[in-house]
Length: 239
Image 1 (spheres, one colour):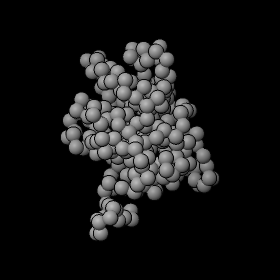
Image 2 (cartoon, rainbow, N blue to C red):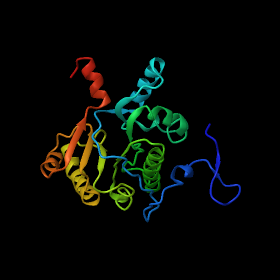
Image 3 (tube, rainbow, N blue to C red):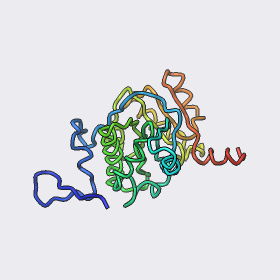
């Protein structure tokens, strides 16, 4: 169990859930109390591994070399229970950082903000994305911001992300396989472009859609990565 810390000037206040220490040094906050998560450097990772893949690699590699280094970035485009919860990265953060430091960097955790989630939960998960990312930068980890949006969070979903930088999107579980969902996705994608003006967009999943090709034609670098599921199928000769 994580160490319980005192927070603020009021005696007896215990920080159990919101990990205030992670953003103690943060100087830049949005009007909606979203901390800014800086991008350590603008680069294109050679590969993205999901948190479960990274944990498995870590458990294998540490037996051979406790100082091993991987050139891949860790991402969290998988079911939330695989990286969140009482044993997840938000609560067992020191255990998480011991794994993360062996990798080239991370994409901030993809704490879910699904359409049918209550707005307070979406705001909470947006805060956690930036807070965890900010803390990782303070630990010397290279961080790239994950971006998630929904119709009722446009006032907060892009807050805390530097402009003219590199960002990452996950297209798995986005509904893009259905043609009917693409117009809405493109609408919010354009809003994101106007807000953040990204120089590089990383895509975990397929980028074989017209709007991504149009972004490339406009001068934005778009780099897509094979998913864990596709890697598994390829290893079995199924793709």
